[in-house]
Amino acid sequence: MRKIKTIILIVFVWIGFGLMGCQAHADDQQAKVTLNGSTSMEKLMNALREGIQEEYPELQMEPQFTGSSSGIEAVFNQTTDIGNSSRALKETEKEKGIVENIIAIDAIAIITDKNNLVSNLTQEQLIQIYQGKIRNWKEVGGQNMPIVVIGREAGSGTRTAFEELLHIENQCQYANEYNETGPVMAKVGSIPGAIGYVSLDVIDKSVKMLTIDGVEPSINSIRDGQYLLQRPFVMATYGPIEKQRKEVQAVFRYIESENGQKIIKSVGLISPQ
Amino acid sequence: MDKSMVSILSNRQTKSMVEKVAAIILTACAIVSVIAVISITVYMFISGTPALFQVGITDILFSSVWTPTAEVPSYGILYVILTSIIGVFFAICIAVPIGILTAINLAEIAKPKIRGVVKSAIELLAGIPSVVYGLLGILIINPFMYQLELIIFKDSSTHQFTGGSNLISAILVLAIMILPTLINITETALQTVPDHYRKSSLALGASQMQTIFKVVLPAAKNGIMSAIVLGVGRAIGEAMAILLVAGNSVNLPLPFSSVRFLTTAIVSEMSYASGTHRDVLFTIGLVLFVFIICMNLILTFILKGGKDDG
Image 1: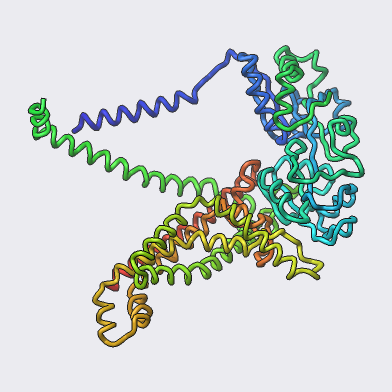
Image 2: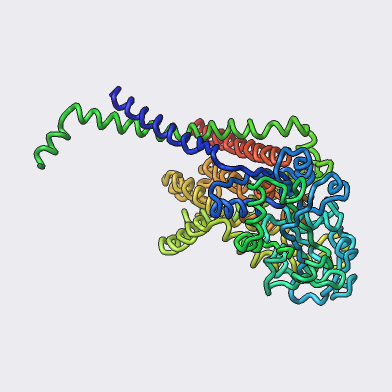
């Protein structure tokens, strides 16, 4: 009886140690690159980290997500190698010696259902629709049909970007909020009079994409900065890339390589070149 | 070979060892669920209470402004709590009459053939994943609600159109989802009513309907009550189907408004929340947890009351 108890106990303890062992992987030999900044860039960073791990097994990326401004702050204080920012750097930040390396562009498309007669909105109209001041499509030149305003949940990167770009943070009157792109696309496609925003790469034939101020979102209009709803993804460094540690340089080299560009495309971003 | 097997099994020492090992395994399995309950309770309180004190209990529970990502964030979940209570209440109001009458039909009236068909339909209904209910809600209930919304609010300049994702859609989906629970438990309760109750009633000259509503139903009262409480528990904890049909904006729960329930409040913002925002989501979880514990306490109370009676 006692023996059995002992055996069971040993088995449990053994399993316990086994589980603990899984976490205690100390690999100090690896070269580390620390990154800090934008939460919107989390998806891109995690994809890049996995990609780099495959190509340079000895190189370890350690991203943290605390927000664009605190990332840039951390680069300036040199507590991190790379500061991620999902907005362009301010002049004051550039004057401090921080270099803006734009690695990708995030663009947002405005979509409606296919039968909507409106095909262009001005920035002002878009703002007023999302603030709930314009409530019917006839006010912007469409049919007499109420507008159903659809958006993403608080904290979502797309929502943050959309509201920041139009300067309407927390002023939006959403009729529907969804926590993924899929439901936004499905709802906009199926409700007559719905409007929504999604990342540019997921657009398909089930919805109609609007032009903003007459500019159609396309790779060209985004790269030359004409299209309004876009923001750069910046990996800021203190001083130019050539003066960084060789591990940091390797990260940028990887991003510019074919595989790195593939990763940028795979997470729905547009390459700046 | 056979002989040796028999001799091992019949050895008294081995036999008692097998017994004891079995007993230990059974106890260990029983302990697993106890540990799970205790750790969940402790964990919910540990992770749910900090935000209550950080933000302030009244600012969370009795404020109606939910802007977790603003410069000066506000974490009021009053509307969310109200939505859960009102949504579940009306879902129960719709589902209970249908559920109880179906159960009566099954237990008292239906012929075995019909009973078999209805019973298997209900079991199928119970087995359908909640996401499928949500999809059906999107395809059938939401477009219908939108048509209704367009007619009712035709001349309204203040109504925000939701495309049919509203409180009523959520209530309808919830009502259908809790039907199987209600029917199954009520039916079992009706079947446990002793047959001599019915026979005595009929012998006294009561009709079948009089017997059912005046004798059988009151006798099964406790069972039916626990069916309702379990239905409430299921409805209040449902997330996936509601997420797809309710619209998920934080609004006062009016019939044609887009609303957010306690469950969907957690699900929809968990993935990107951080800091206090995340803590408050845990607090919402705690509120939900307390709701469900209350439901279970009421249930135990009812069941215990039943034993005292009989």
